[in-house]
Length: 267
Image 1 (tube, rainbow, N blue to C red):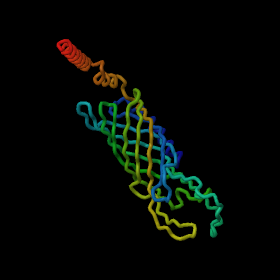
Image 2: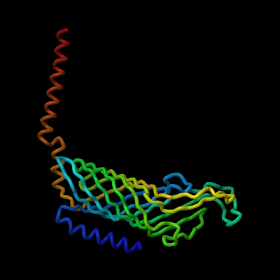
Image 3: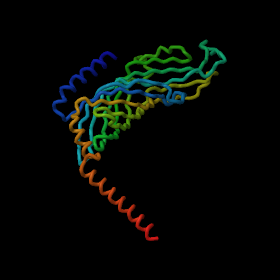
Image 4: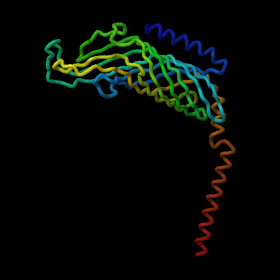
C-alpha cells in the first residue's frame, strides 16, 4: 500500500507542474515534523515523533482588497502514534503472560491522508485555515513492555479509516517558502480497547484518538515572484505613500521638539 501512496504523490506532483501554466492553481510541496500522542491509551505526553510529507494544490475562491479565501487539497504520508519509556525497573513478571513489566510502550501508525483546507490569507503573507481530512491506515507497529504485539493494519484491532479536524497557521518567510503550524485531532476513534492493571483487574474500556501537532515547511513551486514583489512594494516603506507618511511623522516630531525648546527658553 505504501508504494502506491508514494507513486500517487509522485504523479500528483508531476501533474501540478503542468497545471502551473493556468496560474489559477498553485502547487505546494510539504515536509514536516509531527509530535503525537493517542488519547485514551493510559499514556500522557507528546513523546512520539513522525514525519509529514506530501504535495497539494491551492486556489483562491474569493478575493477582496488585501485578503483572500483559498481552498486547498493535499495528499500526505503522515506518521502518528504514541510512546512511553520504561516506568518500572523492579523486574516484576506478569504471572499469566510471563512478560517482564517495564511500562515501555511504542505505537507507530502510518497513514495516507487527504486534507481539505479553507484558508484566510492576509496580504499573501499570513494564512489561517481550518479543515477536515480522511486518512487510511497503511501500517502499524506496536510494542508493549518491549515485546511486539504483532498487530497489523489489517488484523482488525485498529480501524482502517480515520477522519480528522485540522487547524493551521502559516507564514511566508522567504519568497515561495512558508513555515506552518498545524493541529489535528481524530473525529472518529482509531481503536477501542480494554485495559487491565498488573493484577489483571479491568480498568475500563476506552476509545482512542490521534492527537497531533505538526511543524511544516511549505514550498509553493509555481507562484509568480513578481506578484510577491508588487505586494511587498505596496506594504513596505518603498511605497511613496508610506514614505510620505514617514516624512510627516518626522516633521511633527521635529515641531514638537522645537516647541519644547521654545518653552524652555521662555522660562
